[in-house]
Image 1 (spheres, rainbow, N blue to C red):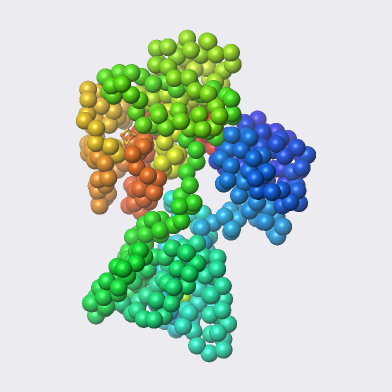
Image 2: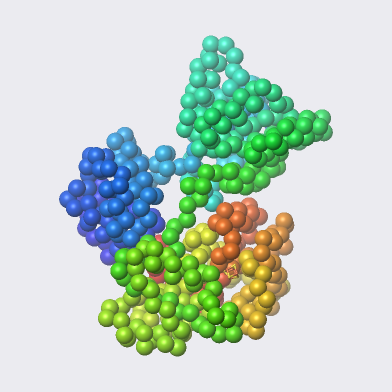
Length: 487
Ligand SMILES: Nc1nc2c(ncn2[C@@H]2O[C@H](COP(=O)(O)OP(=O)(O)OP(=O)(O)O)[C@@H](O)[C@H]2O)c(=O)[nH]1
Ligand code: SF4
Ligand SMILES: [Mg+2]
């Protein structure tokens, strides 16, 4: 990669932050937009619109990038934590509840680490305990375990005060109640969160002691029915319900934390040309394009760039007609090999399906998952997920082509199971690999929940575009617009 020499360490750090979700070329332009003004003080003094405009000109989505810089500036005014996501940019998840209900135990179960001290003495946690971690799909989160709020006595008052302060910075609250116990106190915590418009999830912990508490659980669950707050039963010590709790957190998280990258707009600059290769074959619907193609074209236009759409046969001719090489070529995965032969090596090339792997899912996870193809054995079971219920026609990609390519690559007979739409098996234990379609019909939350389920079950997951290009030996080429993801 060409690394532009930075003038100051601050410029290096800003570059490192901006490049997290864009190509390096765009970062250079963004930095140039600041003129000679790239310093913490000047950024702090810049109005937000000016800041976001400076970044937007480089083809990046304005608000997240701008917000990042501002956050970053806040960070530099204190201490610089280069190796970590700033705390203010993490989704902060506050864990509240009475003493001894198992808040610390739940935090340890969620993080699978002994982060917070657990004991049967009420009031064990005295000061808020913070634990940063990656919680897929929300990305970096900060869990904050608090001291039990029903603390008594003078010391308790101080502890309770600190816990109350945590309410102020909580983006998502977890209320832990144990053994079906629920009273005015729990209502009060939910009211505190409501007051701040903070979404909440209730964890009924110690569900293993349930035989005696079962009825109480049910009556509290009934009580919560009137409000939107989801609840799950957990047994923190055994790990039961922890995955359900994670899923509930993902569903309840504020929308802005689920923000997806643009489809393609950040991979090119305004005015540049993207070439889309769209085969018109038997599987192509009559008289229209399919959703991933339409959405990608729209995203190019939204970013003030240009698009040229061609069939694979006309590609070489079309490239010859362009005065300058295109910023990027995007092709249907199925003709990737042929297209790769026609596109010069220095032009970034990818597939619609890989663009959607990043948009709807987690490209890094899909690239990591694809390696497991090498470990497939005769009889290994592969789950193929197609998120729309189209009628298979001819050489259907999910039913015919992917099985064929994977069999050819591995040289062994594999068993393929297909599921469509929102259908996702409860038990993934039987599968050695999950291959997901581009998921243009699903929202990001649903795909991310599926990735989370696969992770928890220890089953690798990848997507069509990644699997196809890997089995054809051209994945690195297909990842050329995303240098950080190459294998
Ligand atoms: N049976 C059972 N015991 C649990 C469970 N979760 C926690 N405990 C026990 O409950 C006690 C309190 O757990 P903690 O995690 O320290 O509770 P806490 O809410 O953090 O307590 P404070 O910090 O004192 O407010 C410990 O003895 C745990 O072992 C559970 O799911 N089932
Ligand atoms: S939902 Fe999946 S199978 Fe259906 S069009 Fe979109 S990417 Fe293709
Ligand atoms: Mg505790």
